[in-house]
Image (cartoon, rainbow, N blue to C red; front, side, top):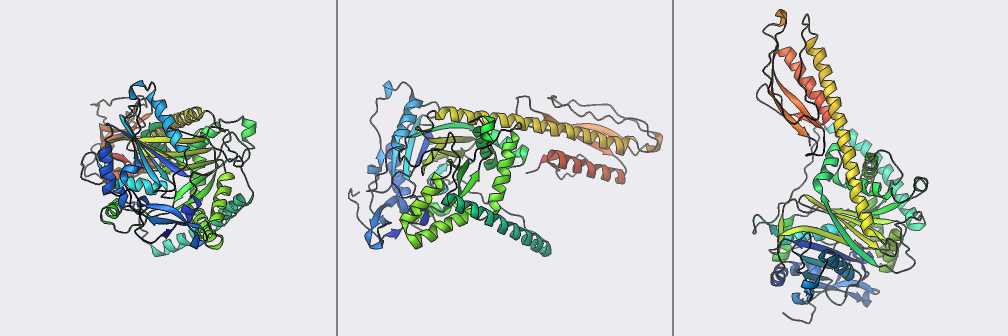
Amino acid sequence: MEKDMEREEPMEPLSPMSHMLSSPNFVIVITFGFKIRCNPSKFVEGINKSLINAPRFSSKMEIDYKRKGEPVWIPVKVRVEDHIIVPDLDYPNIENPDQFVEDYISTIANIPMDMSKPLWEFHLLNVKTSKAESLAIVKIHHSVGDGMSLMSLLLACSRKTSDPDALISSTVATKKLVNSLAWWLVVGFLFLIRVTFTTIVEFFKLILTVCFMQDTKNPVMGNPSDGFQSWKLIHRIISLDDVKFVKDTMNMKVNDVLLGMTQADGSKAEKKEILEKLRVRGAVAINLRPATRIEDLADMMAKGSKCRWGNFIGTIIFPLWVKFENDPLEYIRRAKATMDRKKISLEAFIFYGIIKFTLKLFGGKAVEDFGKRIFGHTSLAFSNVKGPDEEISFFHHPISYIAGSALVGSQALSIHFISYVNKIVINLAVDTTTIPDPHRLCDDMVEALKIIKYAAMQEKRSRGSAFEDMLRSFLDQQVINDGSCKSRWILPLMKPSAMEVKESHTKLVADKALSGRLRTEPQSKTTRDAEGGEGVARVKALSVKISLSSGVKTELHSNINHVSHLVMGYEPKESGGDTDDFKESP
């Protein structure tokens, strides 16, 4: 392949967000941990067949002086070997591989991108760490694409570990349709009023932030005027199951839990009196692009077909609740309330619209200044990228974990979460001149999740006790006190600490007046586990086979289902027999 890069097609202007992110210092650093040693030839072969066919990976950025000095994309021929770096390291003498890799990643993150060639490079390290056998560190300029775009492209280049020839499965969310047109019109009208009001409020907050409203000085806020940043990149792997447990218990989304965890961590930074006076906000990246099918991206790289890809994101200003709270769950409740309000507003789209309008009216320099004011007036950046749910291989290398950070703006702290199978990786990019010990900050975030999870366990246990009390009270009223029946119907409701269910052979004989109408036989029970081990409450809903007259049976069945659905989040599963099984509602 040719070493010299030659023009192939007419130049293309940068998108509005790429203009704002065109500084050589704005890069994304992604780390892939592999389960086997790296084979550089496999990467060369794989990139030649896939990534090199993506337009931004075969283009370089140049200044077009005919367009008032604006940067443009110029397609070129690329020699892949020039973008793959295999450092010559003295592997046997590396005493602490984890620390070595951390320092290596931080070093390349502090080197500005070489703008004279396509804006990407791969660093392959056959260093065995505590979490992987080898690593690939990918450095990409942020103007090439946002986090969601790059993750989608990664998935299109990858294959299932279980089936090396199959693309990863892509899922599309489905929405329930409203049957009643009149009801839809009423709800739609009320929702439109709410969206309009919320959007106006959030728009004015955004304008105030751009103009003059800054966060109060706090320990994680950088100094945008000094112009110097020394980046340190670290990451920590936590369990996705722990986050999902809190999500399911509190009926929230993963993003709400992660934002709540960040808020809880921020509440430790200062004393209670100081926290009451702080205004701390984060710039949260929001993906504006409709879901892109993995197959479309794969076709784009294999056949050269067209596919919408690149930077298409907006930003919302998220106020962090860092005040002291006795209840740790209050942080995620407030995170959910704030994010729900942001979701129904059009703040992210307005942000993108302002960037686009400013670019057309005032040019790229004004767009860069707009971005500097947004990032300079807030304390931190935050994003959450959902990764694959199943194990994949990247160019025939099975992946152990995926980490990544985006270095954008003058903020001293950027927090990025990336999920992979059953893991979530906390990625911190910090300016060491402001935050000298990022590991302590990361430890505090992990500790905050543990505290929130424990509080969620207690919340779930209290709900379990309430369910037992309500079910026992209902059965006492509906069955025991029926007519002249003075016998007690004793339900063996299991205590939260019970681990096994024993079969009962006791039969209760009712009053002669109910003879032949009431007969109970305790049968199997289904277990709802709050979490494996750790003293979690285990509430076991009883499945009782009841021989009743049709009226009593229908009433009992209906009320048990109603109580269990409201209190515990269960809903009845359709069954053809007399046994009432319960399943967890989504």
